[in-house]
Image (tube, rainbow, N blue to C red; front, side):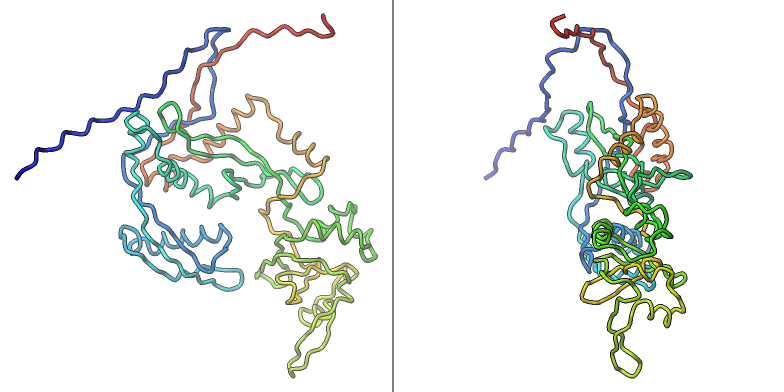
Length: 394
């Protein structure tokens, strides 16, 4: 018994609803939009899931691990759908760090489907294709700059934009891949946010507490000064300066109530006995370093129960730490003045960003056959007649 062949499935063509009409009032004007047209190839992209242990590593470290795998293991990892487990070792702060990485193939992401959606043959834009393109376009900037959300930031070269209180303005750019007008577009815009200034902790404390210089503070901090300083520095990363080239980093968990000359901790001696030793005496004996500001408190770093104390003068604020705390009114006002731009200036900055990014020379973008136009997209707008304004009934 044979069955008749099934009728062919009719090809579905998505017809978007037509807009009611185009504008007629006012006069037309040509506008430049900060969207840059992308040329997308019709190929398949492989989606992998990567599990890194230990977990909760900073994203910067995760990116270093992935970059290391691409450089050293790509022939044995990619192109095969079997799960792979690796041990990856990358240089760390003072010693190498090892991670266990599990890689699992998830799916194929078809850019052909994206073309069909843009041409109206599919009812919806496949989200996973936009996500894949975003990953490709963001990979190199994520390695070069400091990423925050969809934006990338870098300190200004040759000049600083201080906000006061140990904070400063960093300028950068926002980037995202968007479907628009049945084409894929790269949206680029300038952005700015507050970061903590990379500087010695002593200078950071002076800015926070409004000291003109450290020389005017010859007495221990008052309780109110210590509380204010603690609120600002708690949670920040600092790096030490007293161990030569080994710039080990720590996260601040507290500020001690007592100065370095009186702050003690349990020190285990060579004979196995444990004695109480002051931080100032320990640095004098261990590092031959006589503290200049032993009347100031210490930073407690790492885990609180481990009693790790560092004098302020041997610590620097680590660069690239975004300020997520609320800005003061003066800092907000300074930020607004620093970021105010006219439309022509904003256009020039975006054009400079595009030239600097040079996406068409990005090896990852080129590997996927993506091209980005350097010119902004031209769109039509309309200038409406200014309305009449009445004030006081006149």
